[in-house]
Amino acid sequence: MIKLFTHHSSFITHCSLLIALLLIAGGVFSFMTPASAQTEPTQLPLYALPDARVRAFSSSTIALANDNQLAVVVNNFNNTISLTQPRLRTLLAEIPVGRDPRMVALTDDSQRALVTNRGDGTLSVVDLNAQEVTATIPVGVLPYGVVMADNQTAYVALQGESAIAVVDINAGRIVERIAVASLPSGLALWGDFLYVTHFWSGQVSLIYLPQHGVVRTINTGLDTGLSQSIEIDISRGTAYVPQTRSNAQNPALTFDTTVFPVVNVLNLSALAVDRSTRINLDTADRPVNMPFDVIVDRFRVRLYVINAGSDDVSVIDLNTGAAIAHIDVGANPRGAVLNNEGTFLYVHNALDGSISVIDTATLTIENVVPISAATLSADVALGAQLFYTADNPQISANTWLSCANCHFDGLSDERTWAGFGDGGRNTPVLYDLLGTPPYNWSATWDELADVEVKIHDLQAGFGLIDNDLMPTLDEPHAGQSVELDSLTQYLLTLQGPTSAVPTDTALIERGAQVFEERGCTACHVGAVGTNLQVFDVGTGGTFDTPSLRWLWLSAPYFHDGRAATLRDVFTLPGLHQLVYDVPMEDVNALLSYLLSLPQG
Figure 1: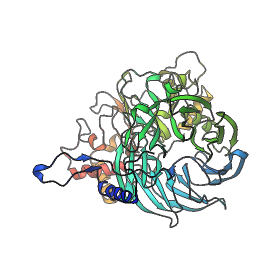
Figure 2: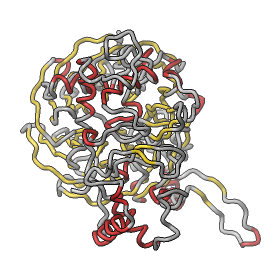
Figure 3: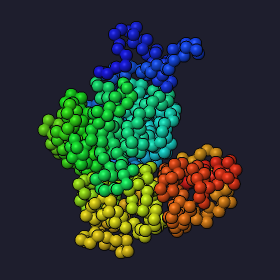
Figure 4: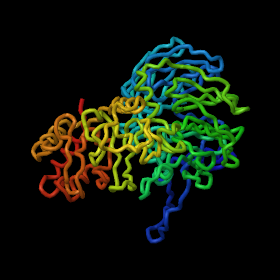
């Protein structure tokens, strides 16, 4: 095991812990010397890692009870959880929870399950013996990952509030909120250390729980993202983070130069990426799409990588960094768990509503267990599969690129892609699209079905319309293909969350007045916040008037992402520049109003 201090005696142990607490702030120790003799601070580690006998817990869509038989799985497309015994091919119960459940954790005694409901902003507490929800705890906007190590305290990542909620599930309330960077998603808990992934930035934050705050942030590399899980190897003091690297600055995009699937390896003692052991999955295995979860087998020294976009599992030998097997599973696998003996891997296929049971000795699928009856309509279900997959030559060449790579859950990937022929393009959110045609920044799509052109041009897919001719924008595409119509139907189901409205309602009301006074309503009309027209606002051409909803989730701003923050929109040259003739307090009020949209 890797340790920062060696515990040879009880005395040293106590000393190291004392030093640890003294050194938490910033990880830097400065000897007390006279000012004239002050030298550069001496870098020392923060604290010793937990003992390797201390179990680590990672957030996932599937959890295994202490009896090594019962698996609890979220069904985010059906708003339920399933209680199942995969080896026995038995579904015990399917229990309704909140909207869009994402992750599940079990109490230490395996008597209760905790389920994050991303659509409701709640945490469901489920009695596994009674097979019913016994409490629903409001936790905040867009809860995602959840972990716990006992029978009382749960840690919940709030994507919409840039915070970790500490929840007392017995009292049914939040006891603390810990501020973190944007879009916290995956969680791993090891002793007093809580590791947090950030969905689009690829950063990993370390929270030292006795200190109640972030003590270090680890950068995993330029443009890494789609980072929703983290797995700790307690015997080696490392962590594995499955991610996708976006090559957004590439000036000449082709389908196979857009994104790259990776697993970053973190040295937890140094709190840094171990670049020498990074796993580039397209070369270690083959082109795969959207590595989304990982499971480490410490005894076989293997890593199971769950690839959500290519519907498969890469089995990596950690001694060599190369794949020893590649296993096809069901549609959109998002999580997995290894049984106690390491003999079976249970892979949760989110869109299939099933579990693939993999025999780890033979690395073959023993059986596939249905766990949830479909509730999506057939066309929406097909559209969702087309949106999230790259494992379909109609959508992508060589299993390389999916729609979800840039728009997972309808989000913006927070990037500006340089390689478009008419200049850089900032990725928009895809929420509530029905009322906002035309589509794309250049307003060249008069219908959502024009996505057929993007599938051909960028993703190098064959396309969803059975036609040998390349599609053009001057022809209608809706109604030409069942698959294409299903994809657009799914896109129309994507709805954004209610904003985490600031508490200063008077400031928001003043911001709404400033919005009216400055004539913003001339272009940003009504509830959708757009007049559906194109304009030149001083950014070098005419572009679609964007909706003003969900601005808090869509930075950077303008078509080319030149405004890193919403405040920059009103300071940069152009028709939106306000700072020279509007009082700063009114600009602040306007920002508060815009960031509160949509309200209600």
